[in-house]
Length: 460
Image (tube, rainbow, N blue to C red):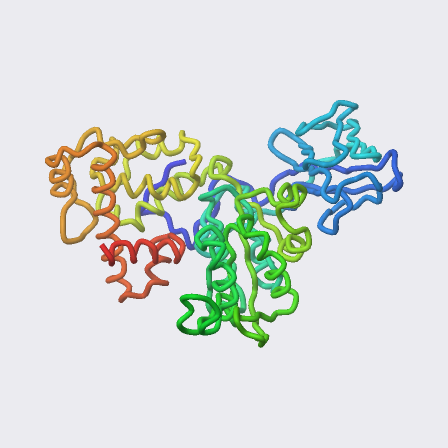
């Protein structure tokens, strides 16, 4: 996929070379042996989630088998066909009599879950519509897997349902959460982030629900929690799977009652908050293993979106690379074709975040065509002394200073990239009159990450 930055407009760009719809496989699970013999459950790949089988309330196919686990197994349509995964069930899963952890199944195979046998029936493919847009808010992508998600995202944005966004690290879960908020009726309200990995367990309850003065040592003043801060808007709970087990029942109570109680207070406060959560963990397995509450999962996963990794988003790497190139200040020089090709050939284990950082390094180091991709990414093999994005210094000067210091490669690279980030944050903030929300949107990154960069270079 090749593009000229002078000839495309993301706001109106149609998806190139892909049809308005595509053919998807359909399957049915038929109970051949067990308490519900004859039951038929049909599904296809448009669900955007796995089909769970078990006796728990979150399962799409709920079975009355007394020996089956709450979440026993999962079926998912993938590129290689229908995959079945045992979710660490008590009594196991077999395919044609062979015990499995994970396996691909075909038409006519028999899958046994506990005391129930399911027959696999492969139906006729059917056409499903794809969105014509190349974006949903700030979430960009022309690949079929992304355009299949946009209508679902829009429907969730128009509702008040809790949404769980699943996906690998760096796939853009927070950006999607902001996009859903901005397309919702709560767009004028606050968008507040609670990152379960960034708060020590001892402070998490106070951060969630707030505290009164004197509630504990160091509580010198009353403080609102994120639920109160998000009143009238959206609360985004990032990395939900890392939430401490002791807080899970308290979070569930707050969600069910729409009320919170500050630490050290006897008063309950009513809150009007829409919840969007995200996780990189497989919460189905976490629930099965007893590390995450089933009822909390069921309460938050009313709507589920699984963001695909960048390696599965055919056609999106070049699009995103050009977008980052423009937004990070690279418009003063063309993006080398060799670099685009390297980007498209790489598998991106760090997903969109890794691509964003690779483009930033390419611009910062001047001679972008010589910036490697993959292990050791960002190695400067040659410096051309080309200008960095407009700022107080030029890339050639910065690079020469770093080279003259004869630092180890890792330290030298860090110094150059840090100087680029500092100047970029300075410039984009000035361009948007200090407005962080607009500056983050123009940068193509989540507001929270932009604020982290701003704080880092402000304090430095």
